[in-house]
Amino acid sequence: MVWCWKWCNWRRAATVIVFFMLLVSLPSRDEQRVFPAVATNALNVATEAASQPTLALKPDDGSVSAITHFARAQAARKKKQWAVAQSECERALCLAETFRFAQASATQQTQHLEQFHKQYQRYHEFYLSLLMERHQPERAWEAHERAHWWRWQKTMSNWAGRDKPIPLNDPQLSILRDVKEQLLDDQTELLEYALGETQSYLWRVTRAGVQSYVLPRRAVIEAEVQRVLNALAPADRQTVWREASLQQLRAWLLPHLKAEPVAHQRRWLIVAEGLLQQVPFGLLSATAETSADITHIPAAFALLKTKPKTNRSLAALPAGVAVLADPVFGRHDERIENIQRKTSEAQWMLRSATETALMPRLPFARREAENLTNRFVPLMTLRALGFDANRELALSGRLARYPIIHFATHGVLNAAHPERSGLVLSQVNERGEPQAGLLELRDICRLRLPAELIVLSACESNRLAEGFLYAGARRVLASLWPVNDAATSELMARFYDALLNNDRFAPAAALRQAQLSLAREPRWQHPYYWAGFALQGEW
Image (tube, rainbow, N blue to C red):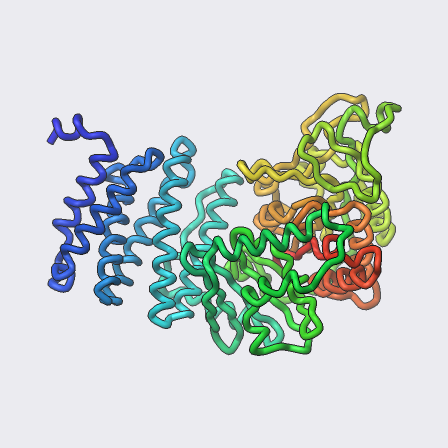
């Protein structure tokens, strides 16, 4: 045996271990009857996993047992032994979840974990399809909700460097009951999406129950999403927008509207994943038949955990706002040097840049900030403009005392390392000396910001919104794509008009009012200008 371990590398050893464990782990006659198929599948799965150079399986990490149970679940499903397949897949998921939880903070095994997470996703998709095939949509939705919540918690806590989250492994926990009782009413429904390699799902959760819909596979849906996003890209802003561009995507993502159109106002809670997180659902809902107040949430359980027992109106809270806007991005800024900048026209300037050192100043950011702070009495206002809009202030804890926090600056998206995405604050001090200016997502996750509303008036800032929610914010308004500077300033003015003036709309309703108001003007009627912001958290 010692000679065998010396001769075999871990990949070969993993194959041997899986097959051996299978031979000694078939206690029932039902399982013995499917032994040939189980053994073949287990060996195939183990060989496939062992052939991956980034997956280092060891006999004590739980991953080998998970592969074994999953292979048995596959074989049982082929034999139409549904109970056995479901039980074995649940065991595989439990073991995989334990492995992910135990190893999530081991940075030296990042590549191994990424590979195993793909395997976990394979188990999860198999389990969802099995439950849906067995006509158990409520159980399938709860399984997806638990996984979604755990994945969000794990990611945020890792970036924050905090204690590991606790998986939702309590079988007595009724997410459906709590969601129906605490989150939903006659005007509110939850739309939760799961994208899969072979097929995808939508669960529509209302107080009446759970409706499920089978959607096309991930690749097909995301290709259509990308086509719509391309039509909304800045390069096409001068073209005439055609409503027909949304027809297919609307039919897939909102199939219930075709059979059950609503003429009255409704509220949608959206739980999306993958490229669906960039879909402007406000644009999809803005039709002649229906218009909805929309908010995105990481998971329904995330809102259950953070929602206070008593509903508080934003209008009833003490007035106060902190604004960080119009930072100084580099030595080229005329506020420290009289050097002529070479930039495009201000009205077409985007609130993002690929090189932070070359970022141009945003002409409308200061106007946006002044318009907002003038609505509040000076004693209840923190106005940090120019050099004062810096990272040190954002991390100081001073912002935690304000119910509304507003950032107007550039956003940076790092697709390879999402935790390094962030908001760009002043990178130069008043003496022209460089300083750290990027407020990264991992910095945000470590903050304590129990604000009622945080507005990220910056490009592609929706990736940062979940970090602020994790930091304690109840609502975050963020952008879905590189937004236009002038249009954003105008949208924000109308949003705060609806939020703070006599009508006192809730944030989700205020956003809808502002977007539809902007869309009615010929200059801004293209959805690129008005549909690029979405609310996350509570409505």
